[in-house]
Image (cartoon, rainbow, N blue to C red; front, side):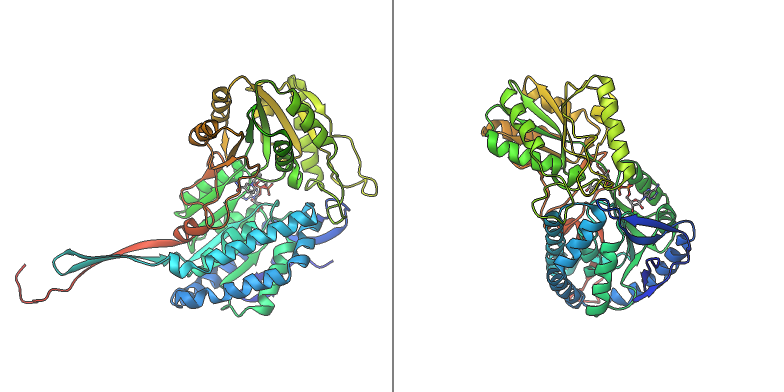
Length: 491
Ligand code: NAD
């Protein structure tokens, strides 16, 4: 199998690195790609930045209305090829085919919103701020913008950034996750073959830390968008700032959902179970901490039943509701974290470990687990699991649960299930998270709203998507103009 190529300046080019990482289908173990890796990938990055910088110098002067035209075509291209893209996502990432299709829909919606960039990016104008003097603010592009993405949404997350960056007049370099490199390889090839974009505006490079460091250190890179784990997000944020770049870095999560005693059991159980186990728990907006208030007997029984009945298997097969986790390392990490929780005093309500999927015995499968009696303030309760594990907690009151939620490290999402408006209102006002769900299990903002968390779930200021995307990828310039009626007047 040949090594994947980089897409640089409108052409597919071999990497400078002869070192590879092998990528396997997490369900079947089939080898699906060899991705360039190691120190020499930095050479590829330095080369692509040069081309991207040259491309930006021309692209920035193209009228905004013209710059969005390729995005209209990109939307249609993704719609027409969503089945092939979804198959690739499932084969490299493990989620079900239906989940993969949903992911592409989210990507398309971001392209649609970015198509309106020339409307959202209009200048602000004040006439006669003093006699004969007008003042206005325009937004101009930054230059070369880079984007570093995680494994869990290979088809969607690049589109939180890509369409906004190029619509506003920048050039863009994507470094996709080395764990899932084939989806964007395919999408970039579609773009290459079908869309007439100037060379060097869209680029794709592979690699890991070495590629990223080369991006962070290069003077021609002006903005860095990152999505991934919190420790790396913090590193990207501080390192990017050290080299004078604009940075938005989205990190990990440990999302709570509160179930009030008046919540509808059937609806709540269905939605919460989908939130915890959808994408095998590998969503930054997956619920992890499920918190009941007061008597929880009925909810507990319903959640246990729902966890046990979830159909686990290869995501391409009909009826499968949950695929494998991404890798052997990830499965081992999750199992070790569960063991840590048990050693700290928790117990299983449902044990989803040590099970095999028939026909896919070597796949990285975990079945849904539920732990209860989890001690607070210890490692298990405060660590991101990123797997199909529910931590069931019980508090006496909504106030106690909010206090617990706000004491946590992360702030990506917090949800409440209730039929009481006052409880919902209190929760939405007081819970410290960037995304709040009220009777919603995955509070994922649609493309016109900003996407990001609070606390250790996000480092930066302007978030992904929508108007924030446009603001992130542009810098403001204020112009003050004097046009006196009488030039000879003495000032
Ligand atoms: P990761 O942090 O391991 O990798 C993300 C990217 O960073 C990859 O492209 C990788 O090559 C690069 N990278 C890894 N280590 C690096 C280092 N030391 N220096 C520089 N670059 C490095 O994350 P992952 O395992 O691919 O994804 C899962 C994580 O992403 C979870 O923590 C999840 O919560 C988070 N996530 C967050 C959001 C959000 O919106 N907040 C969305 C999706 C995923």
